[in-house]
Length: 278
Image (cartoon, rainbow, N blue to C red; front, side, top):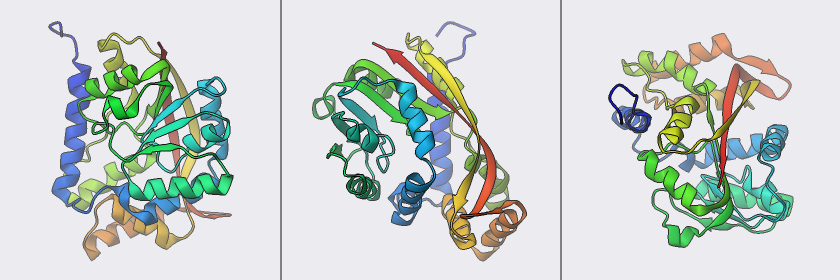
C-alpha cells in the first residue's frame, strides 16, 4: 500500500480476528452457532414463512440467466440455492454445518426442488479442484472469513460470468443489540464484524471495480415465544450464569413487541449487494 492510504484488506482481517477471538475468550467452545439444530430450525421456519419476498427480491437483483450453473458459498438452509435449483440452475453449495445441510435437504424436499451438489467444508478448506468453475458465484451474508484476499481471489477464480456478494452495510440488528449487552455481560466493548463499505474497498484495493446497491428494510427478528427469544439471546451472547440471564431478560422485556405470529425486536436492516462481471 502507498503511504497514507488505508489498507482495507488488513482492516478486514484484523476486525474478523478480533470478533472471533472475543467469542473464544468468552467461552464459545461448543462449535458454531449454526451447528445447533435449534437455531437452524428457527431459521428454516422463518425462511419458509416470512422471508420469501426478501429472497425473491434478492434473486431478481442478480439477474442470473436461466440454467446457469451456480456456486453458493455458505448456503445455509438453501435460502438461495433451493429456489435457484427449482428455476433450473445446476447448483453446488459449500456449507460446513451439518444441521444447515439437513435443513437445506428438508427445505428442498418440501419444495420438490432438484438435488444440489454439497461440499461440506468451509470456503477456506474447499479446494479449487473439488469446487470447479461455475457461471455465477454467490456468497450471501456468509463472509465471516479471515484472509479475505485469498477468499475473494478463489471466488473470482471459480466464476465464469459474475460474482455476487451480499453483506451488512450496517451491523445487523442483533449485533447492535450485542453492542449494548456484551459490555454488561462480559465487561468489554463488543467487536463488530466489518461492514460492506470495508468489503467494497477491499475489492477496490484488489483491482476489482464492483457495483454496489443498498437495500433498507424496517424489520425485526421474529420469535414464536418469549422463551425462544430469550434462548436465542442466551446462545448468541454466550450467557452462562443466572445473573447474565437476568440482564438479557430485562433488556428483552423493555424492547420486544407482540405480533400476530409471536414476538419481535424492531430494527432497521441495511444490506449491500456488491457484484462484478468477469
